[in-house]
Length: 231
Image (cartoon, rainbow, N blue to C red; front, side, top):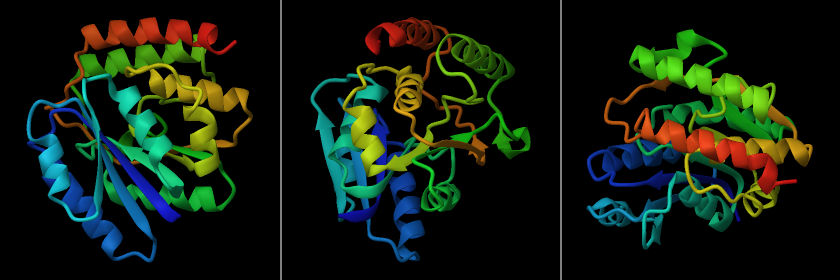
């Protein structure tokens, strides 16, 4: 059993993954925790898996076809061994050193701790284009109205939870796309897990693979299904 599992979903990340993995490995090298790092290659047709495998000690899980970020995170969280399991975007838009904030709250009794860009906007060091920020804020208002109330930023890709919560929640998750964040929080609320949302640093990477129109429509369709999927 590891103290910490770091899960990094990756799709066509050959240009960014080596730098991100180096940062994660270097960060934890100076800490006392027993850490496993898991990269879930979500059906990439580039060198993503090969790059991940070139790092000693990094566990690489390969999806034969591209299923979506939700499917990749779900597999990583369920196959991890850590007592605390954190998933983070492959571009490290939230720097890995923000991990300690989440882990300290976990040690103080929270089951789930999630990073947020909405609590303190000064923590956003590099902003998205204004239309993306507007779409994100609008999406979250809809989410709070329809599915998960009380969470200001459901979509920040920096979330950690206990091994028990990971297994309990992700074994119930069914959404493979970007709407999975909302689904996992909806399930967590239904199961009465103790959740804490905290501000974290965040840096936009203009190489984001999220299509602002196409993926937003898909995400909206996914969140409309959540209540029906988990009656």
